[in-house]
Structures are given as C-alpha cells and as structure tokens.
Length: 342
Image 1 (cartoon, helix red, strand yellow):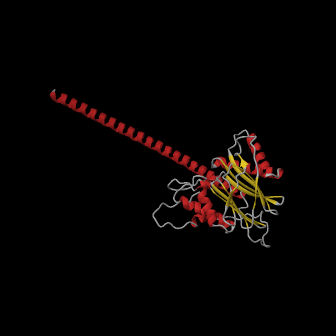
Image 2 (cartoon, rainbow, N blue to C red):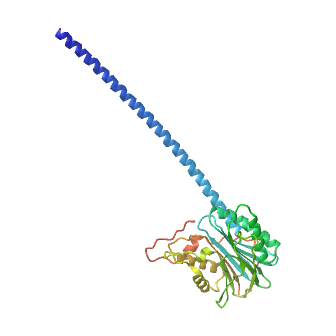
Image 3 (cartoon, one colour):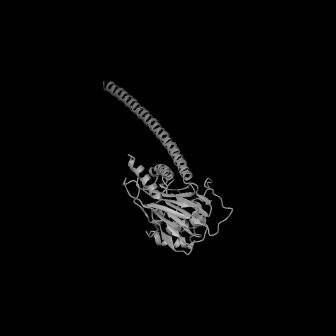
C-alpha cells in the first residue's frame, strides 16, 4: 500500500514537472515572440525616422539651393558692380552676413546723367531680401518719372506707405550725377551721410534729405548739391560699415572711416572700395560682422581718358569675400581666425 502511494506521488510529481516545464517553455517562447515583435517595431520606427530625416535633408538642401540662387539674382540686380563712364570710375560691393541681404545699390543711366542708389532695408535675411527687388523697382520707376532727387525719394516713400503689408523701414540715398556739369544732386533719406573726399583730403558730408522711408506717407524731403572736381571721390555706405564692432565691442565709427578713405585717396574706385572694406574687416578681427555692409565709390579721375567709354551694360564680377579677407595682414598671434562663411 505504501509502495502504491509513493508510485502515485512520483507520477504526480512527474506530471507537475512536465507541466511546469511546458509552462516555462511556453512563457519563454511568448517572451521571445514578444521581443521579436518589439524589435521589428523598433526597426520599423527607426526606418521611418530615417526616411523622414532624409526627406527633411532633401527639403533643406532644396531650400538652401533656392536661397543661393536668390542671392545670385540679388547680385545681378545690384549691377553693374564696376564701370567707367566718361571721367568717372564707379565700384560697388555688398558684404552680406547671410546669403540674402537687405542692402542694395544701383547705377542707372538717366538722360545724360547717372542715377546712384544705396539702400538699407531694416532687418536682414529672407524678408529683407524679398523686399529688396520691390524697393529697387520703385526707385527705378520714380527716377524716370521725376527729375529732382527729392521728388524721386518722396514718390518712393508714398508708394511704400500705400502698401498694406506693413513695409519695412528703409534708409535710402539717391543722387543724379550730371556728367557734363559734374554736379551731384542728392537726397539722403536716413542713410549715414555719404562722404565726398576732396583731392586735398578734406571731407564733406552729404546730409540734406529727410526721414527714412515707409513711416510717414507725407514726409518732406529736400535735395542738396555738390560739385565733383577732378580727383574727388564720393563714398556712400550703409550703417553696417560704421557700426561694425571688434572683439572689444568698439564700433568702427565715422572717425575711422574718414581716416580709412583718406589713406587711399588717389586710388582707383575698385582699389578704393576693397581697401576700405578690408580696413573695416581688419578692425573687426575675429568678430564676424552682425549687419550687412554695402559701399559705393564714385571717383572723378584727375585726367580724362579718350579711351574711357560707358560700360553701364557690362556687369563685371567683383572680388568675393575671400578676396577681401585675403587683403588682410596675416595674424602673428594665436587669435581665432575670422569667419569666412556667408
């Protein structure tokens, strides 16, 4: 009887053991299946994220390409960048802190005169860049409708203030240079006063004008005039140039600009322009400019050349940022190198 009982207990224990083993095996298989499903789900999520990331990268690359192409169009709108007309040499350049810029300049043929424009739209980047083309179109149309610079600027301001999309505040210098009388009649609407560097190195500031554009529809503007003698140079620029700061947080300011232009007095317009820009960048040293820099130089040559012809339709490519930086002296200390990206 005792033996029968032990046999039954042994059989029960064996069954329990087999049952427990089967249960463990089932649980293990369930866990394995569950882990496999989780792994597969993770792989799917990773693949999905990779695909989304790749789509974002492609979209970003297309956007970058579009911005780059827009910047090239901007450069073409600000043309010619270098020209000779009669006794005058003209050179202009924009040093943009981003691909697109709110600064602009333009040289136009206006019935025996040259129209000279330098503008600075508040802000920078995409929004300012989009407004740039509209502003340049307004200036060109107004300059062909009105002969007096003050009237041109006032007309541009009225058109801008009529826009219902809250146009940006814009500083603008517009001038007509009479190539026969050598008289420059101008209107300065809020841009830092352009300079006229005389042959004897004296400097005059062109301040006649009025307020910035886009704020007061009925703003009143006045014109000023100055004669350019042989050897004289007009220097028009945006505030990004004089407000450029160095590592000590000092601004370049008007005093340094006056000294810089005097130091290159007598150079041709292109040399004058890039030497001045190089001086500003050298002052900034390791600190990248925070605002766009634009500069337009108009020089009346001391001796007229019979070989000088109008080249208003010729768009000569000016040196790029790398060339301006190359003009700077090599650093002899271990200072941080200046940023060279756009």
